[in-house]
Image (cartoon, rainbow, N blue to C red):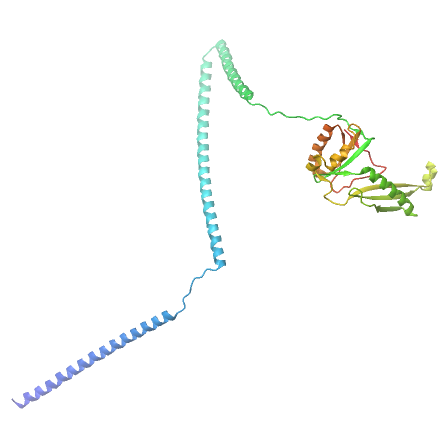
Length: 350
């Protein structure tokens, strides 16, 4: 082989071997890179798995307040649904009413047109008649209208005869005119639906004793107010006033000196005195026993009544009238006390 060709082969062999070495080195670097990337991915997956395993689990535990809020929310939703249904139903009803209204309006318009057409036809027929025929036509028309009205009245009468009117019972009591009481009296307090028997004779005796003692205790005072012991559930509050007559009055009237005026009120010791109304009307009650000691026809029952017991007073008045007693009503406003004075008025009985 010639020397030049052999040298060329040597050079070519060296280049081929260098080319193979470079290619193998590039493939090794690529594989290293891929291996590194895969390793990094595996490490990331492991880290994420470990963190997910050790991470705290947020449990949704519903406390009492949250449960109460949920119940209230459900109730509000149920109410909202109910109101929504009610609104829809109302809207349907409104639409139905509007349709019925429109239908009635169309019917009324149609009837108006028919009436106007009939009236026009009648006027035309009447216009073609002579004077005598027109008068006869008017009479027949008036007769027809009168018969129609008569038929309507007969129907109303038949309907009214089938309906029985409700009977109204009117109660009347004897002696409608009142007269002043001068005989024996039984005094009652009717308040809060309760009847209390007032021991009037004992109160009069105690008041007389108290006034006599009060005059002795005044000793130059112009006024004295005091109370007595309880009597039948009432204390007597009395006031004595001394009035001196002036010299000018003495010169005009010839009456001198001084005079005494007094007044009294009954103070109840309790707001639940006496007996309830139904209990008082029953046999063997305190009211019945006090009434039994009084003679009918000679005793006047004076009832001091307050506004909250007017209905019971009417029933009591009927009961006493039935038993033969006369009744004197003394209405009192709320807060007013039972009392009297020499300047007061006597009871008026019926």
